[in-house]
Length: 250
Ligand code: NAI
Image 1 (cartoon, rainbow, N blue to C red):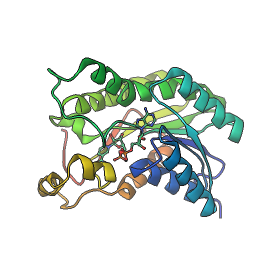
Image 2 (cartoon, rainbow, N blue to C red):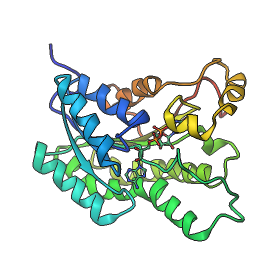
Image 3 (spheres, helix red, strand yellow):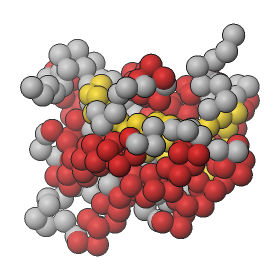
């Protein structure tokens, strides 16, 4: 039986662990050739190896999403390995090891580096990849936002507000090339990074959700597969909250 993502080449940034790893494994399980792209080469190589051991197709490529040179090199590596690119998930972010500080006092160099990764990284990756999607007749880009965009959460939330805006703007710039751009806004999701960030506070957060549990990376995977697939062929510029009912917008 033909699998949903057979013959599709999909890059997932920040795929060395957490939600990105589950995206890479889940897409490979449905036939995609996946590029596991991350700054962390040790963990990233392990993810690609695990996928291959399970019978999937995966390659690891080191990337720093805040660098124009590095993102361009990643796109070239993907094309030279698999012959083209059909999809991109902009999932990489500084999250687990993020500093706690206020917008009015955060160290300026740290803030600029944070935005370079958590906001501009998605734009740089898109700039590097879109000509290759166009060459295949179109494609799908999924940006990883957060419900933090709708809540008070300082510069982390501000970067995610930017991701939502980028999603809407790029949907228009790329729509004429049949490239769709959407975002997923996860609510609090059980990853190692969340355990470091939120710790015991995560239990309190859960009380405020309509569905009384943390999200799992697998909850996000279903949304990502939908947005990457032809089932979403007339869906673009949207931010899909996968958050157990944490937020709502009218
Ligand atoms: P994580 O910290 O486990 O994974 C992030 C990955 O990004 C890491 O492997 C890290 O090495 C990589 N990375 C960081 N800077 C990079 C750079 N400059 N270039 C390339 N790779 C880089 O985080 P987690 O929990 O899996 O989250 C993944 C995404 O989901 C992030 O965008 C995060 O903001 C978002 N998110 C997570 C939520 C959660 O509760 N876990 C909730 C809402 C959104």
